[in-house]
Image (cartoon, rainbow, N blue to C red; front, side, top):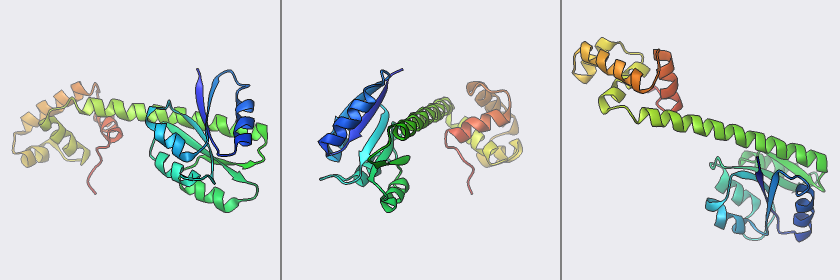
Length: 204
């Protein structure tokens, strides 16, 4: 499976050196950008991948790009910093970078960090798919079935749910059976697992 890596660095020599190294891997597609602004302009159309990001660039800095990508599950960022610049590395990690690599970089260290980045990206993709699947199942429920599920999440009995929804306990049982069928589960714990994955959490 091909993986995409984005090099964002205003230093042509660094970008060319990284491109040469990474191009040795047949499973990698390597794309280069001379500035943070350049990658941010295209970010909505890019394939998921690992971003190798220089911290100091004219225009949008590495920190600006990190902030823009922080909540985007399609990208994992690795910061390239000057040697011994621990302060910047810490700042980058706080802003959402997965890791940092000091320049001049060691090739094997860099490849290890990139491999970790792709592993993280894959895991994030699986989690996102699980959440999307859970939300799709919950969306199949009728409003009353959703209300019943919320009551079950809160730990309420059928009688209490019936009282709160102003319906009979027998009707709650029917809604409960229907929602279990639609969620394709056999136990309440399985139904709750789907509900929690979809972001339905008990009120504090």
